[in-house]
Amino acid sequence: MNDTVDKLVIFLAKRDGIDKLVKTFQYVSKLVHWHVEATHPDAAMRFKQWELASGLSRKAFRTGRFLTGFNALRRGPGATPTLKVLAVLANAGEMVYFFFDHFLWLSRIGTLDAKLARRMSFISAWGESFGYIFFIIADFIIMKEGLETERRLLITSKEDGSEDAKESTRKIGAERVMRLMAVAANVADLIIALADIEPNPFCNHAVTLGISGLVSAWAGWYRNWPS
Image 1 (cartoon, rainbow, N blue to C red):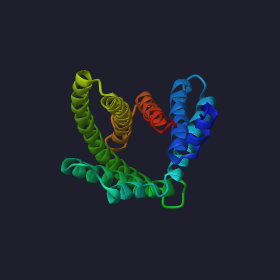
Image 2 (image 1 turned 30 degrees about the vertical axis):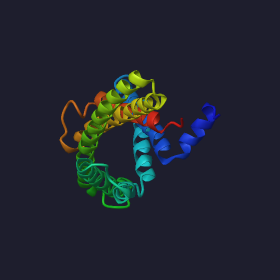
Image 3 (image 1 turned 90 degrees about the vertical axis):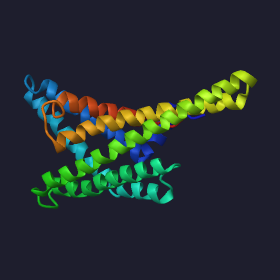
């Protein structure tokens, strides 16, 4: 059986694993920068640089990530017509997000004109928001279907004591937890994306962004941590 160190090595070997670690760095440093900005400006600047470097690193790690959505659609988007439509819309939005994120990264590091950054950021965030909305809807539909199946299985297990029904119920419960983590991450990332699309005092506040980023990162840790 793998111990914690083994699991950490496996986790960090994944692209999603290292992304969640660096995302944690990014948003912890954002919160620390906000907290010490007035009292320790030198330290605040160091944390700001850490935040910016982490953000750029994550964009580099996401190179080619838009192909994930394409492959998901190619391999089979959903079990029902409704879920198929939602999967197409969600993955299309995510593909736009990751594709234009390449150009945002290149403009931020100076390879492309820095003036492109704002436009690329808007397009990328718009695609991200669009996709997350449909991912969230799909997850709620699947969780609702899971609850209905779980109720039927509970009745079956009470009537005949079926071990298969109990095992299926356990699996449905575990899947529901994973989907709740996905919803939490998507809602948090949606808030961050809205800060780019339509800046406002709530979404753009450092605490809102910091907490949202950490919720997303830690939900990702949970979902990607080896069992």
